[in-house]
View (cartoon, rainbow, N blue to C red):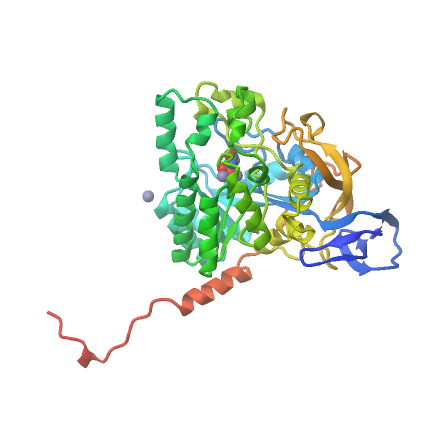
Length: 484
Ligand code: URP
Ligand code: ZN
Ligand code: ZN
Ligand code: ZN
């Protein structure tokens, strides 16, 4: 196997920062230390070495709202590599044929991936076939199941369906994820707003107030607790749902929260833009919020009540967004971010002192690898780990522009952001996949990463639930009154 040595860099791990060289043998990190020789030397003087980013929330080529998201596994993962991300986790959306047929579909689409990838399986209805197929999905290396509490009439499941699915997750050692918004209330507010003539993109935000997210987060947490499973809440955008997560964690519940890079830096004023296209391009669920919410989300990442920063990359062109002219409920929901997540988080997080470099690594890679049960194969620079490494140049600068991005859409919601701190090089399983602005990994280079069920958080929770389960009090019959 060809060997590579990355020399002269400073390794940033989630728990420490230190100067060391990295020896790579084929696809794997062989050793960390000094004075290595190898077939190829990569000079990382002045740069940081961080584990490749993992984005656990993407929708590549997703069928949604009458169209498909435009970035597929080819362009989406090219964007990922350019931004230092070496693994994505995409959502499989089953149709009426069931989970396994949909999974085949997603394997087919992901054949184009340039980065490694995994899937979450969505549960969008409840019946015997779904119940029977869930363990088979787990056998295929997928240990997470997503539930949409919104998108009524399409993807949404109700409480009894969700509870049944969460119980099944507990049985098979899997973890449920939720999109937390009260879909019934959203559907009513949408119709009310439209009837009142409120049909522009700003009404999308009016129809999904933060209270709607907070209520659903609290409900999902209660249902997970009753089912005895850990819970992961995607795209936490506001104080209301963050507060629910904080309260649950303070009670000892195993609840994880994932803010998006978009919600950390963009706010609801974006929807007031006088250009319809500008506002519609920013329509996503949950919507961008009052800026006041951002302080809490940043603090949650620093103090551990929130664990992961994702993108929910679901990129639609301006032409696709225009399906909703005259009716905001028809604007395809979703924004991009795969190329920008790490540079924007570094610039707006580390350079402002909101996050330490170690916290940056934790929330972009290490924490999610642990939550998804793929650590330390992913999420770490350690001997034996996959050699997914980003060589980060903290002095490199750029201005974000749709004109230079890898994503296939015609705009960027971070347009004009001035960035300091960018990947100089991204290695994916030991191969240079991105260098000096160019994506080198060919389409199809990515591999599926299997994730085993029953991670330690599930085992700990089921042990505790068993120990504290309601138990019948055994009484001497003489202490029990005769029945009537
Ligand atoms: O608006 C969004 N977030 N679109 C993608 C689907 C979802 O809800 O995650
Ligand atoms: Zn029902
Ligand atoms: Zn969602
Ligand atoms: Zn999503």
